[in-house]
Amino acid sequence: GGVQASSLGSSVQASAVKRRPLLFGGTAGLMGCASSSGSSGQVSLAAVEKNSVPRAEVCKGLEISRVVKGCWQLSGGHHGDRASDRTIGKFAVDDFQSFVDAGITTFDTADIYGPSEELIGKYLDSRGGSEGLQVFTKFCCFGADMNAITDKMVEKRIKASRMKLKVENLDLVQLYWHDYTKKNYVDAMRSLYDNGTVKAVACTNMDTKRLSEMVDASVPPVLNQVQFSLLDRRPENGMTDFCSKHDIKLLPYGVLAGGLISENYLGVPASEVKFDTYSKQKYASVLNQRGGWNWFQDLLGVLNEVATSKNTTIANVASAWVLNRPQVVGILIGARNASHVADNQEASRLQLNQSDLDNIAGVLDKGFLATGDCYDWERGTGPF
Image 1 (tube, rainbow, N blue to C red):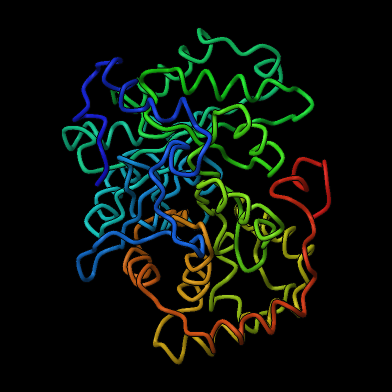
Image 2 (cartoon, rainbow, N blue to C red):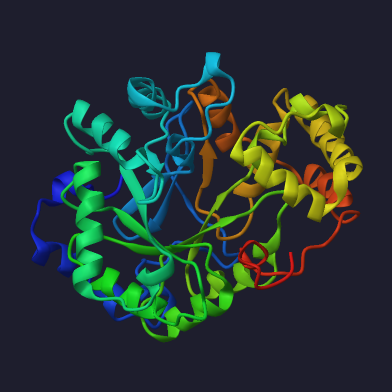
């Protein structure tokens, strides 16, 4: 894996020296990462053991599993069926080991995900530290937080995340900025860059214009975490090309639309679908924007044909499709328990041929074509 928090110690100076290229960005190879993308913009894969999850480089010194365990589900409100729920307390802590054993060594959380950081911290503590793992968190700014960014305020919140996660340094922190009319997001990036306990700085749900401003200010993110799936291809509306040019990776979430992209919904009327979690409710609204339930059934049908031909699942085909997109370094899989770990392994290694991609594209082209940028629709600032 990459350089770990536990191996770096608490030396701010050592951390700052290692991150110095981050502070003087301007060319693709020095924007926080040694360039790892080829001419197509695709990430290069690190060597991987058979039956594990392939790995890829986000930036110099940070290598991740191409399947990332998303920990939004640990924030509360994602319990779903009580019999299979492992999103709270000791159940959640114990479940982490199943993911690690499968080669899923990268976790993604946020400072606003309820007890999520603390649950990860308890797991790290139980195994004696974060060696061999990569933990991503977020610095989320809403309301008054956006009015004035100071190094002191950033340090206070970063320290709180470090304390909850029980680590001396944070592998990667992603900035979320709620209101673009408050222009201090570049200042926030600069403060994160200047914080010696933050080893890499990234963004989540930023649009291309904001990424461009950060690049121009020499505080580019190493990645942008965005919603990207067969139901939501907004990153293809300019962001992928921009990120390829400036060596910014994409880390998609929502690749299975809250579990809707699966055999469980093939041939099922919309009236019979139980939207019983935040995730399903969110992606149901996206589906209405994308093409409606009948079109979605056509998509599931084609995905099922591809899955059957490869002796795999619809979810694995959908995951592999996203993993194949340019600049995608890995995908977030949100899980309420570890029951799908073997599927996650398989999805990360599944190869789709040109015929598969063409058949999927044939259905996608019949749906509503998104025209907006990432997260603009959710913010109420632009179209889907």
